[in-house]
Image (cartoon, rainbow, N blue to C red; front, side, top):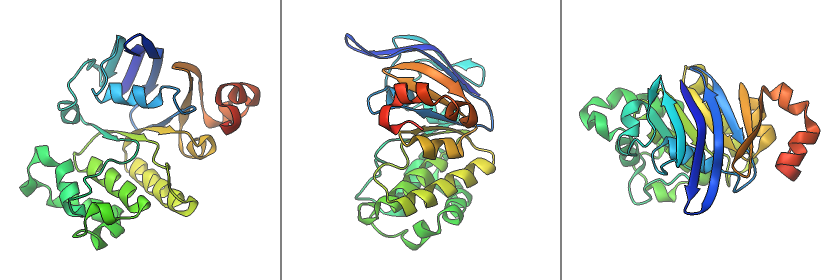
Length: 236
């Protein structure tokens, strides 16, 4: 479904990602794991059009989308749940959800809204509350629900466990698995290695902007020394 071909991204003279290649096939959930500052979010932001690549290609469903403006990326079927959630704190829960589906027109979103509330009953209970008053876990659910309102075929999740209590992390990942079972293709960025490997079909390991390893969770777990070298204390 999506393939990065030798993607390089630089901020001025600083190269954040160097010739990174990865792919996510339709129906897969693929992980991208690495330390803070390894380049994970830079890759996600490049796919979303927020950071233009210096070189390389981003192919989506056979089409070159490299350099597509961020406002046009959702129209392709790509939705991005950013690190830190970035909800609209002063809007209600339901208003946030409608923002996610703005391009379809509010009058056409009743079915989408109903499905999000089925997945996230807590959001239905809180639909008239200001989003800034939600707990961290509820805000993460809202961020995912808002992304689903754009009707994506490909979902990017950037650090969905960040800042959440273990029980809430478990709930969020159960919901992610449910979305995946329904057919969503997902690229999951996660610093928690063991958590990521429990939920993905394959994963890539990135260190200082370079993809170092790729494989199934079983294959990566079997390479303890390399995982420790590339991931330090967060390795499996």
